[in-house]
Image 1 (cartoon, rainbow, N blue to C red):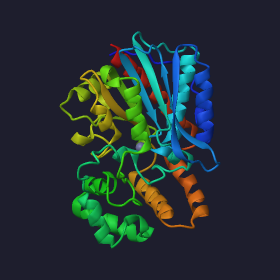
Image 2 (image 1 turned 135 degrees about the horizontal axis):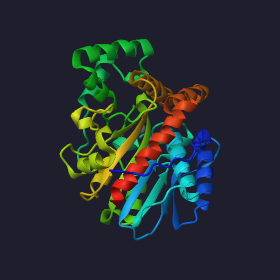
Image 3 (image 1 turned 90 degrees about the horizontal axis):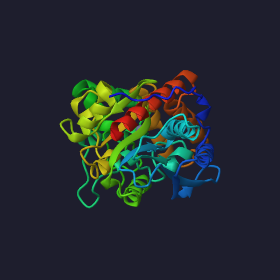
Image 4 (image 1 turned 30 degrees about the vertical axis):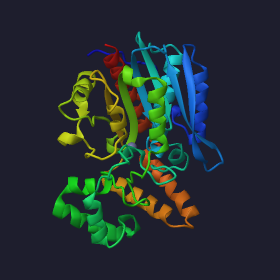
Length: 369
Ligand SMILES: [Zn+2]
């Protein structure tokens, strides 16, 4: 499938310094659009560290009756919003300057900062410790169990995030030796619904970002349109590479659409071809449920540092937030979080912008063909 890649110069100045700055710049770009655009904000409870309001902003660009829509999600995991904002601001500028053309009968829907609290406070989760990307489960039914998360708890005789680094390393290495690498990654990160202070906690009710998605789906009757959803993430996989992760079932219309549009770089956790292991409660599933056979949802995941480093940094973050009186330590650690999820390296940021342009162009071309 051919697609048009915008060749305008890449400017890493689109990477924001904070959630508040990102929001301001994003809104400024919206105001520069000359085509039809409909803006809708979704306020979130709480405030940011500088007293700023927390809002998920959305904009629909193009004809309101378009039968095809490219949906760009950012900040599903709060702190990963730095790259998400950069990609969205870059795309808005390209549209405003006429450097890209949205195909006929097609609209672009951007959802900015799905987890604004985590973005503002430089955490992955929301104010209740909930990982939005483990939250799409049916809360009226028994919640998924993660027996290996419990096994780790028993092995360490307490939560893994409360152990000290040396004790944790020994326990995790022992677990990996006995059960294998994939089992270890699933134990920690596949999702758990038993420990609100722990990592990858799916919550006990629909979180803000899920309600925003459901609201947007209703507002624009998205179940009646063909959708190319791209959810922007960072922190897993090879440094600077944007992996296209498809969590549709391997033999499904969604996977076939992803492979037709994005080619051989599509990776499937269910087939073990992705840097991501299979997970429960992914935001994907809320969208899969309303998608027709000409649609697909992919995660565009930009790698940074090793998965072991990701786990150690995240577990330390949960340790600091599980205990009170850690104000300064949390602040210091937020800088380490920031470096893991959005390296300041200009080359990394250029790779993110280039690859995002490429994948967005493929998605637009795919959904509109
Ligand atoms: Zn993520």
